[in-house]
Length: 239
Figure 1 (cartoon, rainbow, N blue to C red):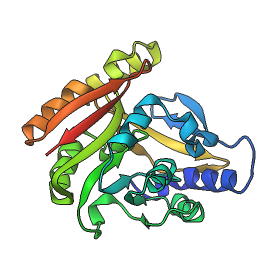
Figure 2: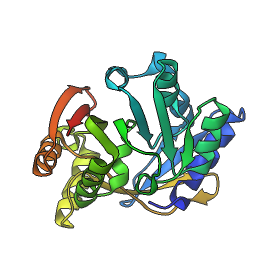
Figure 3: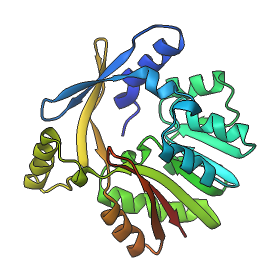
């Protein structure tokens, strides 16, 4: 994913942080479907975290890497708990906001260019795992994590089990993916804000069974720790 793809999102984050009300971005899927996302959601506090988010933060240990940290809702809570946590995001707007919010260790960088040493926990919440783009990207990321994790280190991520969701609008998209030879959990969209349209983003949401298959293939163990009614689930991957 390119930084330019998230430029509209970053500008919207900045507008909201600076006091603008009712800020929304539009997600434009490649089949023509569009929907709006309120930016306020990305600034939510711990009182509005889901059960999955709360459980994930309780599992974090030692030196933590928060990938795709956004404006840092989870990083802030981990700092309060006294953990040594490092937040990375490819949006310069998001990173500037994190610094202003008091997050100590912030870098505007993608995870493949890290020079921060190794970690006990790698955290990807808010479906940040989507950045891997496809199943091969998932394998590449997990293999790379072996170089980032300390002994007995863990990866904690959430994703959405698309095959379990029976909404017609999503079923049609999954069928379209299959006809195109793609995994059903791949989604291509662009972010729009004001008159700015970002580059195309390919996003992966991986179902629990496929995640288990891939982790096992690469020598990890994977436990599914919880699942919400909307299909969101939490996974813990161990070396």
